[in-house]
Length: 67
Image (cartoon, rainbow, N blue to C red; front, side, top):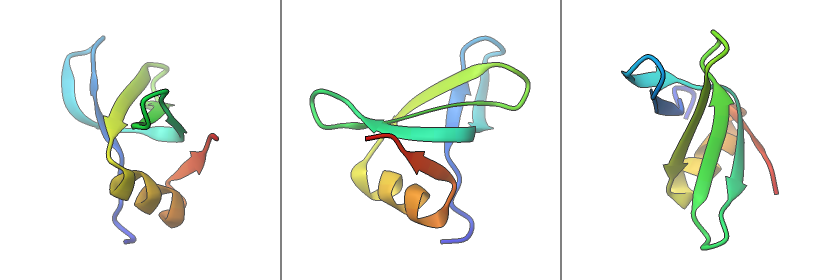
């Protein structure tokens, strides 16, 4: 569990697999999990994820719970 990372696609720079920093995980209206953060260079990142990955990231301390 120590190597849990949240990655996302950076729309601005068109990079795949960018590691998200300062992530906050929230629930959408339909029950999905969404992580929002930045890439450390000032670009915002957002990605959707499943419940298992979201809970693992919160438990590992990679992301904060936003609900």
